[in-house]
Image 1: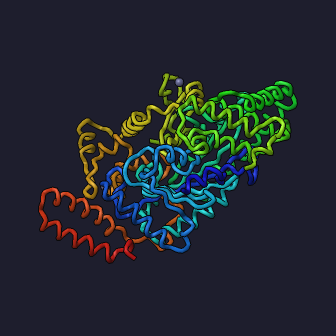
Image 2: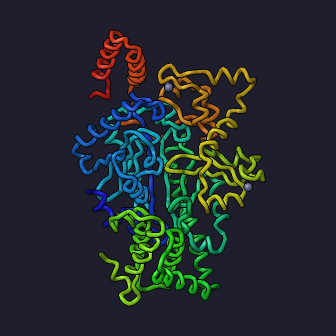
Image 3: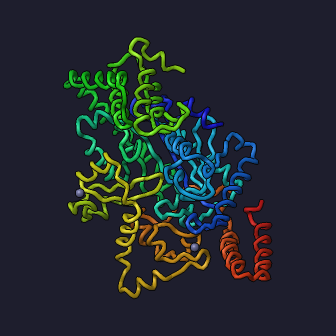
Length: 358
Length: 183
Ligand SMILES: [Zn+2]
Ligand SMILES: [Zn+2]
């Protein structure tokens, strides 16, 4: 089954390459689109939903150029598998938990994802490792054109692409950059940065791990407005501010290195040690400690571990991934033990990081 | 609903959790679903740290109803607006206000004037300037008609009026056969 293969691979957004990838995890663009001849989701009958799904599936998979997409029937999946796709950012939590006919189409590299029957009929998403919004836009624009040649979108000459929620109308576009800002958190400057971003109509949110707990120092910066600006303007709006955020984070890291070196070294090495030696560990604590370790690697404080390996640990210690890798259902306590075992096996003191290459 | 142009519109907004001045206008995406929050710095910090999104639905309708306050001249006017129903999908403005989601593409035409202040508030604009469909802007009127006919079809089938149902089915097939969606 395709999901089992995926568990052993690393999705695009965790590859840890691309521009500025010490701070920028990934760049993501999504477009909201609706078919012109169906009501929006909340007014769809079960038959409408099923027809939308089958129409999209047929029209797109018949096309040679879209053959690289694999359709997954989300309604048909086990809860664990849906959770797994959420952890990989291929479907939204809402899409996982809703009812009725729905699907997701993904490509082999997990760069593209096309949710069918989410809040809108179509939610098209492209992800790139590192900071590469222009590349992401090129890909999604092209994909959107190819889909549009097969389906008639709801479009209004004045209001643009019509969406179920008026907050998405116009371009239907959300541009997001996922940044890792541990030094701004440690130096308590993160709030100041948020405030300045809010002022220019950008949205910042934490990336969530298990349940409602925040995931170690990762923040997503995205645009808020979708109408009255072109796609390129929206990309610039987010893209122009990210280098400033990166610069703040680097300055905070420099400050820690120069002024608080002992504290910093202590924090990083304790984090690394705990991850190597814990007997049981929660998802939240793992994220927190991995965040410190990730920064430690970027600052040259840890030499035997690479960024892609840490990125992989972030995802593989998530609940659904852990269970898929172990091929069994585990409750929270069991997961905490399993997570510690897994970390131990991947971060062996003597073997260093070599052991984690599988 | 979303938080929109913070700098300009939300100067006097109170924190939704503690009534201090809200300086954070967070449009959260819970599973790509927009949720607007207006918070003071302390509450924003704890929100972002804990990811408290348990109040999604009430917040959406709350913001929606505040949003519409300027429109509301009398209770009668609001009642009249709330009762307005889209002839294509049947959604009422009240239902939209409650759920924050529209019922069909035609709602943007039918409720056009009623949505205008909301769009201006959210986006600071009411004119799309971005991408357009490659094949040009097709006339989607017949597509909209399909939405209405399918709904009507369901109703007459429920009423067991099979003669009418077969008429409607023919109409649907005709449009499907000629429309751009059937290419
Ligand atoms: Zn407050
Ligand atoms: Zn309607």
